[in-house]
Image (cartoon, rainbow, N blue to C red; front, side, top):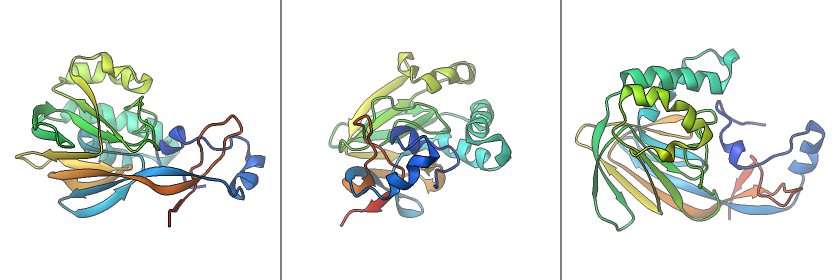
Length: 225
């Protein structure tokens, strides 16, 4: 079963834990809707399912991809994040959520989240739900290098909202513009640079519904008719 380097989508969509349950899961004819995102950047249009972000995330993805596979996604992403935090320079951007006002921010990153996790188990958007028709938008503002390093554990616990530099919002459309192009990544892959537009596609996918305890689940998806 394909799960990706960081295995982040499966953290939001439960799947069978026991190997003997996988066959029954894959043959279940019970489906539930899952939202997707559409992203437009300097390299054109693409789609994503979990999380996309503009800012330091693209640097982390680039460095994590160079890490040894034997260490696993979480370790590679953690190491890449630590190095990137030491080298990254925060950037002024203009941010707009839906038809709201244009916000001027100096940012470390802006995560546009359908799922809750990115970067190998960082709980970037604790309130994100992949089937509610909304993005959770997390803006990490002008955080300095030392605070960026020392607050990394908060990202894994999902408690970074305690920082004054962190803002949360909800939107169906997100627009990010910057005078200097900044990197964008989507679902752990490099996706060009700003300007970037993110749009939610409610119910665009159908996922196999695995819920022995009554919860949404499944890493296996098909495109909805």
